[in-house]
Length: 384
Image (tube, rainbow, N blue to C red; front, side, top):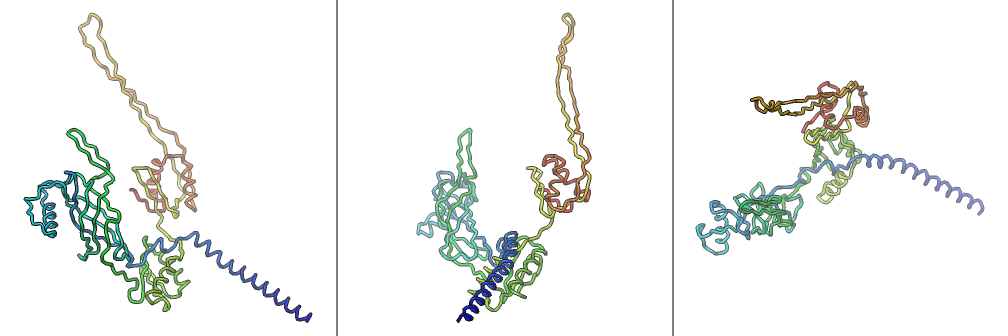
């Protein structure tokens, strides 16, 4: 019995030791991926599945209830729309019978997302197409909204919200925002579903929002790590994936897409410097590099002051009073030494080197342009 107890304690000690080693190994395997995941970006934030996209709907209709700010009588489309609506209601009138300025012809635009189902509500933008002065207080009458295939997918109706006003008097006009464009929150109701197909044959495609060969290759590598021999890059934007057999069914492919979206990769991009000369804004990517160069930048300021003087003739002379121009011109140029900007390994090194010059952002714009022309800026320079 004593020997059996000793053997049992030894076995328990070995099991505890093995369990400890297992968790140490598991932790060491997971930690690097977690660090990588925190530094990288999810696939769903930089790419989308082909076929999962918004579609645009549009229609034209009539806004009623305006307070004399609608279309004038010279715009016949408005009167024709009104006549058509009343005919559907069983009221027979002609265009000459309709002299109201309380209506306006409008265009309605809507974005319908993928997987929208009948009964879902969408936001609506309403824009005047006539000479109406304001859509304030108007109500959109029921309007069919169609897609590029001329099929009706939604209907819109409801009171308008313009977020502004337009008040006119005989001598003055006060306006806030644009009163001929309006918005209806949840103003459209989906009537027909747009079919979305994830699988094209046996494969699906993931499309990068910012095409890049390096990023596409990294995406292929990370997908093949978890699902071997399933992904390949078609070009810089499209990666085609053939789901494993376990994910070929309609319900399983959703789970497969969700797994792909949760993968992390570090996207690559072209070294680029963006310059907005209107605002003095400079944005540089992390891959921007500058070769060793010498830079001297000095400001030249010229001040011109006009001080005209009055010349008076003598007391008994026959001369006249004259204005004699006097101009004072001063030119000042800052003395700047030639600074050596060392080649930077990171964007922080580049920023630190340029800050040595001690210039304003607008001066830095000129410096970036000169460095680019000197061939020392290894990045694309984009001027907005």
